[in-house]
Amino acid sequence: MTELTAPRTARSTWRAITQKLGSDAVYTEELTGTPATRFLRHVVLLGLGLFMMYPLLWMLSASFKPSGDVFSDTGLIPAATDWSNYGTGWNALEHGFQLYLFNSLLLAVANIVGNVFSCSITAYVFARLRFRGRRMMFALTLGTMLLPSHVVLIPQYVVFSKLGWINTYLPLIVPAFLATNAFFVFLLVQFMRALPMELQDAAKIDGCGAIRTYWSVIMPLTVPALATVSIFTFIASWNEFFGPLLYLTDQELFTVPLALRQFIAAEGSSAWGPMFAMSVLSLLPVIGFFFIGQRYLINGIATTGMK
Amino acid sequence: MVTLTAPPRSRTSAAPAERSRRRRTAGQDNAAYVMLIPWVIGMLFTLIPFGVSLYLAFTDYNLLQPAEFVGWDNFVAFVNDPKAMTAAEVTLRYTFIAVPVSLVAALGVALLLNRGVRGLKFYRSAFYLPSLIGASVAIVMLWRSIFGFDGIVNGFLARFGIEGPSWTSDPSWALVTLITLSVWGFGAAMVIFLAGLRQIPRMYYEAASVDGATPVRQFVSITLPLLSPVLFFNLVLGLIGSLQTFTQAYVFSGGTGGPADSTLFFNLYLYQQGFQQFDMGYASALAWVMFVVIAIFTAINFLVSKYWVFYND
Image 1: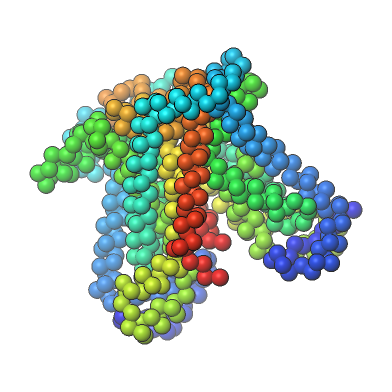
Image 2: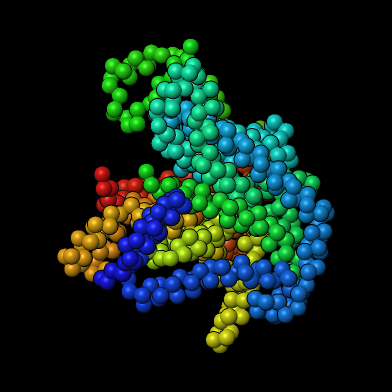
């Protein structure tokens, strides 16, 4: 195999730059193959990438097309631009779309707060403290990752209904405050184990108890991992369909996914333009968070397959 | 006074004497237990329902009247319920096609990206993004429309003189449409593969090419064995996730599982029985059938893994 290497100085500069950028350093070390095969690789990757992105681009373009044109005008650039789709879609349901956006945002924020605090406290205890039953408890946590959520669904629903929580946000928020997301606990444990032990000793000398050490020493150092947890929580909560479908019945409480679903039921297939307009709006926050937090997301998902 | 001791990095590094001294510091135990209170409640809230749902599976229960014990009736009903069998078949067919195809796509793209490509970040994002939004209502609706009879897929096929089927309303194609949506979300598995590929020391390949091993040989003899734990991980998670598909099926068919029950996924049927018919006893039985099936698949996976998953350490 032909090895094509850049001049030494350029390469080490490049390495220095990429190392500053963090984890991506390892990915850019070596470019293998002849220029021709490398070019071919880009052609294949670009083609595939375009293929992957095409549905999203098409949806964006469809959101600006008059409803009648959505399928007859096949181009990505609309022949006629209809800005009114956004206005029509916004007001098509019982409440303006701002209410659904607000509801979704409220749930997402509550879930982020819940997961960040409950999972990080739990992870701290598992990663940094010694106590009886620690290993067994941690194993139990990991075990719940393999448990299909639908097995516990019906009794949980019964409990929530006995508590009078149906048609409130409580069933969608409270579990987040109880460290029920084993994956996040695991992620944070892995991260906290890597922090130097001297920190904890220093805190001890300064007279910190376990809780104080968590709050003033470990938690601030865990911020990158907590960012990962927050972004994953945001995306999961924003996309969540099943929970709200099960627990919410009042239009006033509906989240964006339920509203979109309602939209399709109410308007049928005639209002394509407004439907795609609202679909685009519903995806924008997720895509926005994705671009802001890419590195956290990718490191977060990449670590799940490793030990 | 709370005593704080740093846990050793590995399980074995603490001397036994030191460990027993730690054990006696009850203060630390107490602090740990206090901080675990949310976790304990959360655990109870998972484990108790787990037991209760097993009990409910043997009852007739509609949420309003008290549960009435009926023995194995629900499971007998399940075996004789053609719709439940259809649901199981749809779910298994979907899983057995979507999971392998996604894994092959994910591995293929990961290999391409692993070759040291400029613009890696850009490509990785383009492939990863769909997996984050694939289960959202907007994307499922988008899929339904692009595969509709007048949709862009058939428009594209028409350019080559092919008349595409009516994907969404033809029972033999509707599931294929959902499979393509699932494969479109291969990006998460790809990122994990890519991280796995990066763990393989380069020197193995250098040594192999000195010995004259072809790229194919290198892939079979180095990449695949060393990547097998990651492949195993992706396979197990892919299977579990895929068997539990709900949103796609619900949104795609408007909650019916149509056309002609061709997208009646097991979870969707469970939802219909439990929360539309309020037959919660039967729904619990269905949930337990699913749990047992998932457990069997996972167990088989773990047993078979002995023969093909290679751990380097």
